[in-house]
Image 1: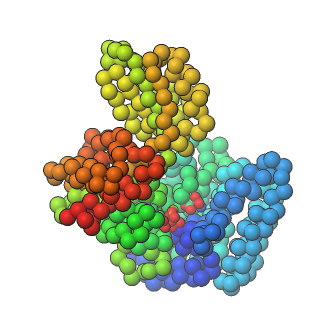
Image 2: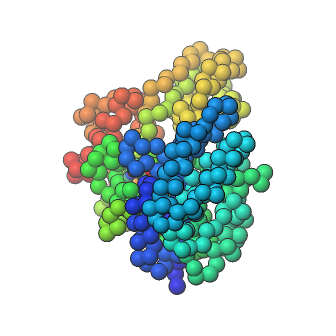
Image 3: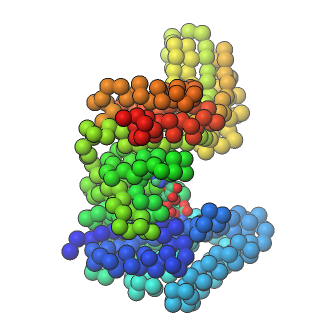
Length: 438
Ligand code: ADP
Ligand code: ASP
Ligand code: MG
């Protein structure tokens, strides 16, 4: 029989009632043999994710501050959940080990990983399924990417015809200790496991009925996409559509395994299917995504165009600081680099000092007011007038465009606006291609 790998996100296991829904979904199709699970997420908007509380406990303990208050919140949530599901006590041993580990100075990654560990233990007990310890199997390299050896090890461990529950988010690092992926990384675990067992489909169960054409928090009635390609999805998730971790497509794309995004709370909804190709003649644009958290460093210098190596030295300075950049818009005698705030951290002063010294620019400015929005679609390169439609819509919404970039693959047009215009720009671009633009 074919195997389906299903991954359930934080909201899908946020409390006992949600875990019960997961049980029904898994039992609803005998092909759903492998279940990957996140740590419990938010139960309502003011709630806290277990993973955030774990990071907090670790940070408090590292500063010799009492961590018992957030720890109790974590312990109560898991114990309550286990009791309501009729598997009382299943979390007790892991919780005692967690408390001891935090107090004994266990690594941040180990502490953060315990949310998934406990979540998987409870779900496995609820389903009467086998718990799989990924800390022995899933290798995570220094860049936070899954290692090639992981696939065969996971395939062996997951062989059989019984239901297995796999904790997401963590594995074993190069030093042999527990290491976590970046935030939202259970999606990557799901993809790696799907590839390892050559699944027929990788189901990703979350709290929305698929990938919407824009962030539903900005465009509440955004239409769901029925189909999207791996490449388009990568572009959208990298630019902020947080439904699926942007690195989660790589393991499944190589093996041609489709991803099906589904809603745990609306199982009948069709969701979004992610595959290698789609018919893009009717919908050249699949969606819009963006983030309002970018900074630009702009440099100008007379005759920069003749100064061979200027660009290399500028990017070299970023490299020595371990900073990834997003875009490098250039003019004849000017060059700028766009960096996400997350990457830049508090290094702006140090960077600009070094740039002034090594590059001797006539002008250097740091502009912290940039949002980037990407309009994504495979059909864009085949249709005239897409860019015109984008800029027309932005102008009608009185959004000033501060930067434009188009990838060489012509899969997206990226526009930069001020942060204050971010949401208006997302809405204008969405309307241009969905409601008002036809
Ligand atoms: P999970 O905990 O299941 O992994 P996430 O919170 O990581 O779920 O991702 C789902 C959330 O992504 C949605 O609740 C929604 O707020 C957000 N989101 C952002 N952009 C989009 C989009 N384009 N379509 C759907 N959801 C989006
Ligand atoms: N629990 C982790 C996080 O909150 C991983 C995940 O949910 O995918 O980032
Ligand atoms: Mg997620």
